[in-house]
Length: 286
Image (cartoon, rainbow, N blue to C red; front, side):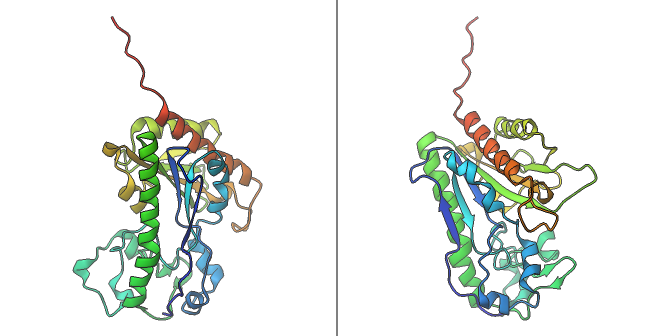
């Protein structure tokens, strides 16, 4: 597999000093496909784009304008998946083959969607050849780890300012149809965020008129698990949005619902911030 050249892997948007306890993560919308990456793929770019959370980075501007920070990946998911543990890797994809004891397998790696995706459903294997260990290390050192450091730094800055920080990890999901929920909130079944915050986000989604589910079929991934620590005042919530809500029939370009979904993300971020900063209710004396 051809090595990818160095390029800026992500953007940080928002005020220099935190104006909101909310930090948005957009890990799967990157579209900076290098020539080397495309040359190493047996699939055309249009197929690699199926891995993207298409245009989610363009949906968060209202939340950022209202004061939230945002960390937006430009490196494509095909290059490295920022919502996977760096050990969540198929060892057969790398040469020389890494020690399996240093990795762990999951349903995602078995499905071809580990740290380095290697298969796309309906399209087959992605790469012409295996990835060199040096290139894997470069992607981890220059894309994966810096992205997570940027998230941690933004959350720490928000926590210093507000004594609480909330990560809203933004994703999109394939159209589900059949009356299924079009927005799914994932809180690792209550482990990554305080219940009152998730409840506030749910109220915002329902008020906007979207069909909602919690933790099914998406409960949260590596980003939610890694950065959410409610006991320390740092919370994390994943939001998955049906692509048919905001993309056109081609599922590539903005559709008629694009602005409504941008408003939705802004409303969820606002609801989380408002709930986080709400003063404790005084207990009436008897």
